[in-house]
Every structure is written in C-alpha cells, then in structure tokens.
Image (cartoon, rainbow, N blue to C red; front, top):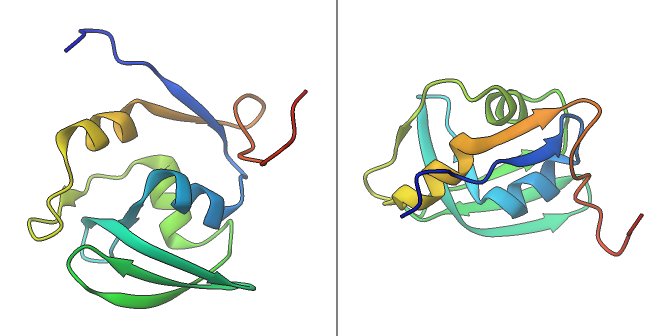
Length: 111
C-alpha cells in the first residue's frame, strides 16, 4: 500500500442521504460504526439496513446527530459483526469536510 492516502473533500452541508450512499457508514448512539448494506430512500425518510441486520428509519437532516458525527469524526469503534474493512475506515479518516470547497455530490452537474 502507498504511504500517502488520497484525501477526499466534501461540502459540510451536503445532502445527508447522498453522503450515506457514498460512505456506506452509520454511526450508532453507542459509539459503534456500522456498515450500511442497503439504503432505501422514500421522500424525507430512509430505511437503513446494516451488515449486522439492524433495520431503522433515518430522516434527512443536515443537523442530525449522525450527520454531525460523520462530519466531525468523533471517536467510534467499528462493529465486529459488520466487519468494516480497514481500507474503508482509512478512506473515511482521510475524508475532509469544508464549507467552501469540495464535492456537492450532485449527480449530472459538471462545472
């Protein structure tokens, strides 16, 4: 593996569901990071299924606890049942969020 990990930049206020679709990670309230197996979006809600077969509903909010945790990278341990690969955790740790620079995760729009 290379010593230098490529940094990815996203906007801070990007749509929450698009960020979940891109990262495929879910921070639980018990400080455990889960891998997302399936994400079904219906309007302002999403049904999330993790790799450890937990199912729950999340709402699309830029101020939600989960969105803040993903942006700020508060200390979480990976779920042993989900078995998140090391490369995905390294990719997440190298991701940066900026207010004025980075991808908006908008499909089809090129500047």
